[in-house]
Image 1 (cartoon, rainbow, N blue to C red):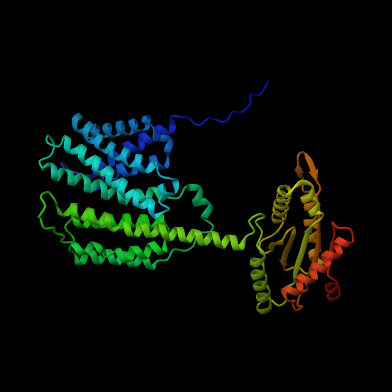
Image 2 (image 1 turned 180 degrees about the vertical axis):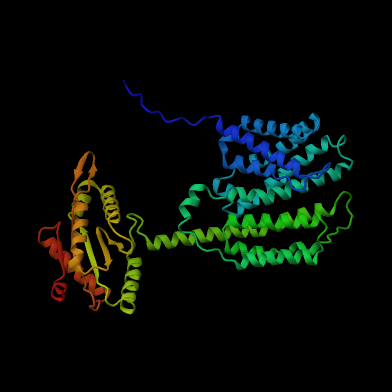
Length: 476
């Protein structure tokens, strides 16, 4: 009986829109249930979260996607007992804020859109302000049947809440690393400095204890310190935490925050929201600048350490690490044997002359990758220049390291490099130098000179072979 081939299931195209619909429905229900009865929400993060989701998933930012968001919001309102007229209109206000923020931010380059530049952060503040204005204006159009306050008070209430919540929530979503980036950086993660975080928590406590309008500025120094110490994503989380804490404290009258009512409709909470939203601008911009500087320094350090073509250590980086290894051996493990191998690709100039430098670069990359696949942790591998490479093997004397060198020679000989369907034979000559156990180690310069002499003999005697330094033969 014939066996039918197994077919992998194709991901459904309906799944992402359904996820967007379910996310909107859940967020809206949570926001409705959390707000006070017959009052606007203290926080309404739904709009900011959905704008961030659509910016991070542009395929869902389609007419169908926006229609699903609106439908889910309306259904959530109706399920919680709202009449259909306010449900339709107020969620149109929410949709207007989401669409405005998305429209303005989606036109920025990805670097700005992900808040990796100060310009992107400033643009985000402008987009949040525009989205809040659209929502507040639409709310005022139909405010009379449902609000007792004046149009001015209604507009300020909507604007202050939408603007402050968007400014606090959106940076977290836009700077959040992808799961792949988290997996890739998990092994390289460094311990987080606790001092800036503890100072921030202390300053927030002092804000509540002292109270008054000026108290909302107490955490600014700690937030700036955090911006210099942490990633933009972590700083965004901290600004969200600090800002929401201060807004709740003001709303609950824990800070004795009062505003002179010289302007009709301006309440304490409105003033606090706007002040706190503008307060986090400085730390977010500084976090972008600091992250950009750290990335630049990391790239410069990588370029100074790693050969860009082969991925091996550069000559200068190898010199530093090899000297450090020899110094450590002399001070802590004087009995440890050590071997230095000098490797040179045979007839490499002929490959360049016959096939061009692009093919030569391809051969260098394949050569280096093959060697790296056969090396162990703790062994140094570097490109000295051209087709010449060097390997330092701690723990093996030259006599024992011959077996390692032979394994590498065979791996290169078996390397299948092709160009224009033509096989390119690649072989390597290797020179060894080093010191046996309990023997004093020569300087790096002497090891390199001895290995280079052995390499010269290997080439003179026919190439594709291994030779050991004469001085090392006498020592062993």
